Amino acid sequence: MDVKAAVAFEAGKPLEVATVQLEGPRAFEVLVEVKATGICHTDEFTLSGADPEGLFPAILGHEGAGVVVEVGEGVTSLKPGDHVIPLYTPECRQCPSCLSRKTNLCTAIRATQGQGLMPDGSSRFSLDGKPLHHYMGCSTFANYTVLPEIALAKIREDAPFDKVCYIGCGVTTGIGAVINTAKVEIGAKAVVFGLGGIGLNVIQGLRLAGADMIIGVDINNDKKEWGERFGMTHFVNPKEIDGDIVPYIVDMTKKGADQIGGADYTFDCTGNVTVMRQALECSHRGWGVSVVIGVAPSGAEIATRPFQLVTGRVWKGTAFGGARGRTDVPKIVDWYMEGKIEIDPMITHTLPLADINKGFDLMHAGESIRSVVVY
Ligand code: NAD
Ligand code: AHE
Ligand code: ZN
Image: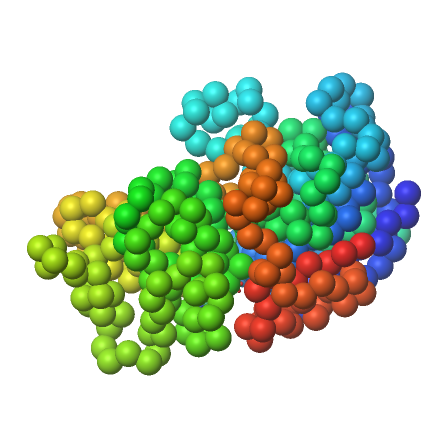
């Protein structure tokens, strides 16, 4: 069938909206009509050419929501008409990783997903007979896409697509990093570096978890009001303080008898490896946990003095907030529908597919939190 897609032909070039061809679902695959998709910084990261796994030409997008149109042979858990959220971290419930119960990083289809292909090693998308790569197993910058059954979370039908698409990445990543990865407890002191589409969800996750002190750090002062809107208690612009941010934050967190200082939990939501080091080093001696969420460019590496770890700080990372998509995503949709978490105010811009590049421009300019394309 012919579908409308924003194609990434080359790294560093704007997307081009085109009619491309999509093959129907093969065994254990599902054809989905995408109703809405968010634009995440990771789409920009791959489009920029900084992603070692970036492949071109490709149909990017991994933060969608839509409706099942057709199911391939052998599909048992979904039927036409079901409302779904695509999962770049699938949940097969059978691979050693899923069965370990220690990680959400299902390995069933990761190898082909990283090659921009469906699990059988082929692409469903093409243009003029030449294959186009899938992206993160989702390719939501197209109004129809094909995904493996294990990469779709079935969600309730009254949830608005143009809001819950954000649960496909940003919301789940931010809230999940707090709840699943850091396991933040009531009364904790936390620092969030980077108050964009992910960082603000970390902040609302910290509010949900009952953190006492939530320090937000961003180089853009406009983010102060945004952070406060979701529960941030203190704001720091590293460009506006004297000296290094690490002792500055350690000082801020000193309280009563605890004159060592440092946060119980810190989160990097920037993808900047210098910031990742600062986040680790301003966590508390003996027990501080620092979670890397940001995705760093090809070749970038993190560094710290091993003494930072010897003295009890823990450096962790999280993908998709540690969430098991088919199990957890429908619950997060319920939290949104029940008013336990907020999404609407973070969706600052809604665009038609024809204007998708404006969404990237708004992100570059720091003017959006999330732009959502509605088909
Ligand atoms: P965004 O562009 O919306 O926000 C980034 C924020 O970081 C901006 O507010 C920016 O001003 C701030 N910032 C940049 N440099 C900074 C610095 N040196 N110090 C402090 N603040 C700084 O991006 P986003 O969509 O929120 O994504 C954030 C990061 O998370 C990206 O690297 C993205 O690729 C990554 N990500 C990871 C996962 C995961 O599963 N691990 C999921 C989604 C996104
Ligand atoms: N391909 C990159 C890494 C990109 C990356 O880390 N992706 C995150 C999700 S970001 C969503 O916005 C992720 O889930 N990683 C786990 C995985 O299996 O991809 C690289 O550096 O090679
Ligand atoms: Zn994302």
